[in-house]
Structures are given as structure tokens and as C-alpha cells.
Length: 150
Image (cartoon, rainbow, N blue to C red):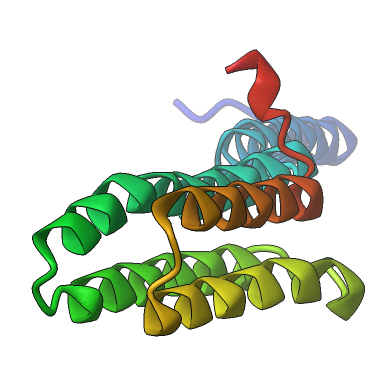
């Protein structure tokens, strides 16, 4: 036995089912999109984290430099390699921070160039430490990192 339904009622049921399906789809899309999208705060936090990685790599250098100077062996290649690694980390941080202009990028790069010059001219460890501190401060300023609280 077939159930007869009036045409207007059948259209109403089809429209109601369509509206419910649309609302469910929008809700699922919102939840998935909201959970997978990066917010601007996430992007800034990632940028700062990469900047901190570069600063941390530089902060380890004075110990290695002092050991290289006291050993009086040819370890400047090791220090230069470590500086290059820190420069790579800094470039990664810049890639994650396209909003940082040249005015903010230049001081850390100049400070790292000074560190390379320090290694080449074999400055005293305390001078090298000072220049590393200046490079770290430049990175902190560029990325808005407050290293005094950490």
C-alpha cells in the first residue's frame, strides 16, 4: 500500500531536509576549519620560536670559541660553521616572518657578519662574548623576544 503525500507537503519535507543538511555541513566545515587554520598568533609564535632558535645557536658560541682559542688549533672553521648554522636558522626565521622589513633584518645580519670577522681576526674571548650578546639582542629586538623573562 502506497502512502500518498500532497505535493506541497513533499516539497516542504525536501526543503527541510536540504536546510538541515546544509546547516550540518556548515557546522562540520566550521569545526574542521577552525581546528586546522593557523591564527595570526600562531604564525607570530612560530616566527618568534625560530628567532629564539637562532639566538640560542649563537649563545653557545662563546664556549666553543674560548675552547678553540685556548687550544690554539685551527678550530676557526668549526666556529665559522656554527655561525653559518645560526645564520641558516635566522634565515628560516625570516622566511617565517615576511612582515619583517629590511630595517629589522639588517642589525642581526650585521652582528653575525661581525662575529665572522671576530673569528677571522681571533679577537679575545670577552670581545667575542660581547659581540655575541649584541647579536642576540639584535635578534631579540627584530622578533620581539623578551629573553629577560625566560
